[in-house]
Length: 374
Image (cartoon, rainbow, N blue to C red; front, side, top):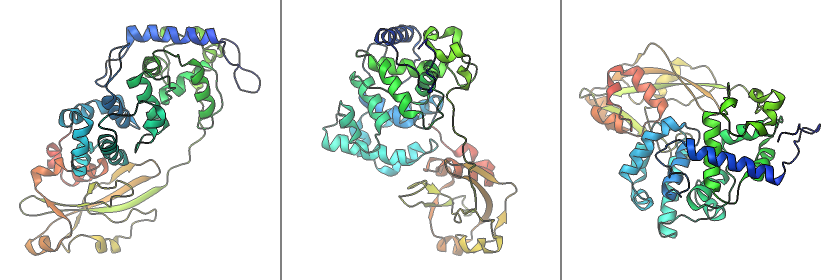
């Protein structure tokens, strides 16, 4: 790793004893500097598989800071995989609301039911067995196998990609570099304490080998970093230029009754935000909104008023811009409206995704305190 990369762009393979030294230094650093996280066991100990699985599913596309409160709330409500499996899916979706990527919550519930029903409440202890479960892919299977069961498994998340890219001067842009990064990470994974090593790599990337201004002076393996030696560490990992996200537009209808109840409806189980609750909305399309046709999608023939401002929200594959309309239904209109009337004080406890919480916040700024977060 102190050698310069070959001209082909593929760094030379490190000597076995060199890789062992890297692993040893990282583990010693982790013993002294490991982050204290609610789902972790102390260095040298195996963590609860249920806690590792739950945290890894939550951490996909989400930050550690955001996950902490949700993780604690889930454990308090469902302290075992069996209790989670027995919970109604709607309750799980409500508890998940705000974490985003809601297919994860559906897969979480499905996986809990398989573990409880087919595995006696015990997670498989191998990568192969774990990958057979709903919602568990290669990364999550490796993380659980290593951290919870001590298996020699190579765990590669975004932090590890950055560390390995810099350590080996991998200049191929992501995502094309992923196979090479994984192969190089595999050469470093020790036979013993693979779980601690994986978490050490994650912690190094999160706290030292950061995307901008890495603290190389605090890095326990800086002497092995060919990216640092070449002075290109801050440019790694390289990434292919992203395509600009298309913009979709729509309108939402916030309908209330005289008692303050709000009309919500449930989205189809499959598809974007599947199974979540929503404020009635038009289809989300790339064409400009035809305001003359908007009334065709309104849940009631009420006196709709447009709310000043727009709600914007970015999904993985598109950016959404919503126009908001509000109205108060009379008794006849309320009876005909299609959806579910939710009492004002209960709206915050519904499984409303973040974009719909933004909608309600713009339409009903006084309702903000009603939204319960873990």
